[in-house]
Amino acid sequence: MKNKFVLGFVMISIVALLSSCAKVPQAEIDAANAAIEEARGVAADVYVPAEFAALQDSMNSINAMVEAQKGKLFGSFTAVKEKLAAVTTQAATVKTNAETRKAEVQAEIETLLTEVTALVGQNKELVGKAPRGKEGAAAVEAIKTEIGVIETTVTEATGLRDSGNLVGALDKLKAAKEKATAINTELQDVIAKKAGVRK
Image 1 (spheres, helix red, strand yellow):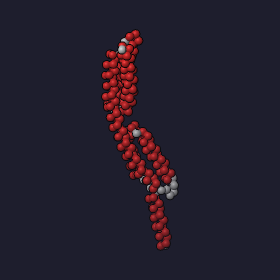
Image 2 (image 1 turned 180 degrees about the vertical axis):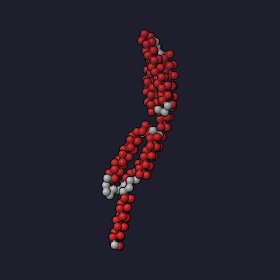
Image 3 (image 1 turned 90 degrees about the horizontal axis):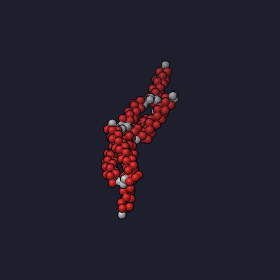
Image 4 (image 1 turned 60 degrees about the horizontal axis):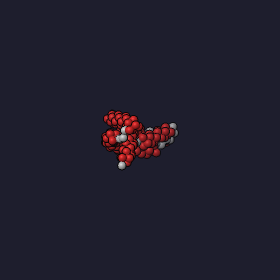
């Protein structure tokens, strides 16, 4: 009778031990998911999309591991816990990188706004010096129209920046600067040729 009691106690202890070993690390899963959401909260998917995608892939892989271990009689979550700790750390890094990139984009936007505004001002001055002639007048009017489009783009970019769409604003300003620079080069070339002919 005593042996049966001892055997029963040992069996219960083993079952308890196995069930505790195979317990899903829900607290660690929740912490990792919370860290990922914090990264998403600072728009990591926008500012560091590759890093954020890798983070999500890692979490998806862990979820698959959890399901695989849950299906085993003697499942172990030791490796899962290690990976969850790594993902939580990775998520914090991704969040920091996203915040850094966001600040860089904001600074780039301000620089581009200054540069494009200056180029537009120069281009307007250069238009006044550009030769008219037969074809020149039509070309000058076309350039004036293009300058107007650039100014509209700058206004739109400023609106996007103010509404929080920094990436959209940056893209518009890059395109505006490229166009304004091309106009500036074209006008300077035409004016230089005109001055050369006069000499």
